[in-house]
Each structure stands twice: as C-alpha cells, then as structure tokens.
Length: 86
Image (cartoon, rainbow, N blue to C red; front, side):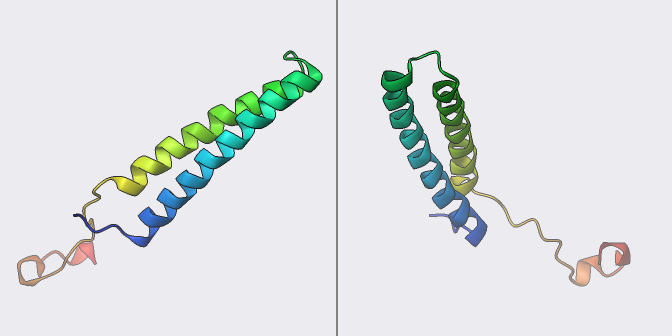
C-alpha cells in the first residue's frame, strides 16, 4: 500500500463531504421541484450545485487516492556541482 500525505487525506475527506453535499442538493432539488415547479430558478440552482459538487468530489477523490511521487530535489555528493538547485 502506498503512503498518502496529509494533503491527500484532507482532499479525500473533502471529496466525501462534497458527495454528501451533492446528495443533499439532489434531495433539495426534488423537494423544491414539487413545491415550486421544475422550471423555477431555485430548482435550477440546486441542479447546478449537484453538478459542481460531483465534479469537485471526483477531482478531489482522484487527488486523494493517486500515488504521487516525492518530487523534492535531493542534494547529495553527486549533485555537489549543481549549486543553482538549492
């Protein structure tokens, strides 16, 4: 199993929260669709929020679960002549 960094764990948990928010917006959209009618701007706004939260959830879910390599530049004896990398 790969080791995930703190930022990856945070992004995964925010993705879960985003999925839950999308479910809440779906429920609100269904409720207000019955109360106000399906052509009301509030219903359209909740529909747009569903698309937004699902998109954010997918992106953060991928960031939270992907194997990101360590991209730090390591200086060692072989890199002694590369002073511009410090």
